[in-house]
Length: 182
Image (cartoon, rainbow, N blue to C red):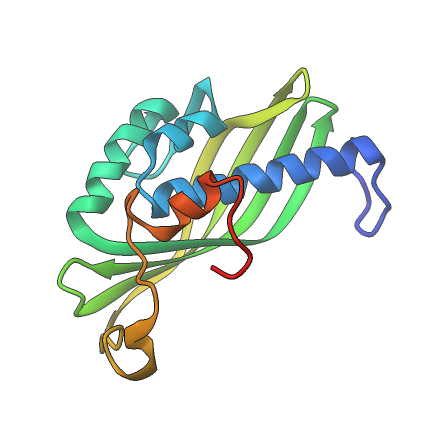
């Protein structure tokens, strides 16, 4: 079911694309907020991953990666862009996405910046899409010194990001009646 670039997708195909983009975004949030439960929720129980140093069950990886990230980094930001879709059937899709991930080291003195790609496969059961497989492809990585300005000037009064449930986003997203002026 390979479509030509620029071809208008059907309504069902657009729904599938939106569901897959939401999975990609939730996966990044899971990494950045150290949320193993969310990561497990986006993978089928039989899903596998290839993260280079770990090749195996996605649900096992979800528990391992949270400890690894917490032990090395204060904060991370995983940004996924330029997703290209190939629908293999109405229930199977493959994507390639660019990933740009920043990792602030625990002491705040430097960051590791990763540029690569995610090669993902998704499957749909009923109307529920989830990851079936992920492979991480590294294009390049670099480390940069950081001058931490979070407590300086006009930045000092801003809410600070955290990589756990104390981050402001947890309350914001959990609250059904968030005031517009917060």
